[in-house]
Length: 126
Image (cartoon, rainbow, N blue to C red; front, side, top):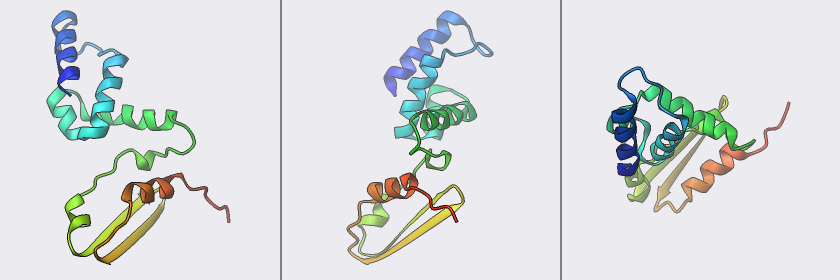
């Protein structure tokens, strides 16, 4: 994130302040950071509009191909819930569908693989 922040600050000093259109290349880099760091954190740190950043992330997912869906643009996991003994719940939503997996004991599930399988599956037409 630090590298993108430096590039954005340099661009702002050279090309103006509020109201100037940020080049798509910088938006793309910021969107990549936001996919790792989160939209809110990235928007605050880089001083970008949250809505613009979110829209570019969704656009990037659509450009990736058939497997991506707008509902898979952001995944938030609290890994403490998956590592604690007792009970863990994983809920996934996308395109009007939802799956909920409840696990007891010491859950050993690959949450990322589960999410990818859910969002990339072929839908049956009724």
